[in-house]
Image (cartoon, rainbow, N blue to C red; front, top):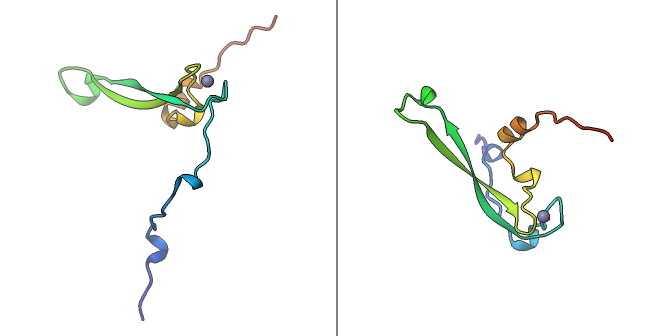
Length: 90
Ligand SMILES: [Zn+2]
């Protein structure tokens, strides 16, 4: 009796451009983006290194208005920027 392990093995799927969907800027519906890098500082107190170190995180921003779509932001950074902002009603 042989036991099939295929169920647990992820099968690589071939994806073509036809299988993709367009990504638009959430703000202005532009469809082109430029790459930018968010720098995260790691305290030397955490690493034990003599200096703080930096972790570059690539993000994509709209080439027309500079907006960064929510879906491009790593979940860890989203949580940080989700601090409530004060809304002032006129
Ligand atoms: Zn935009």
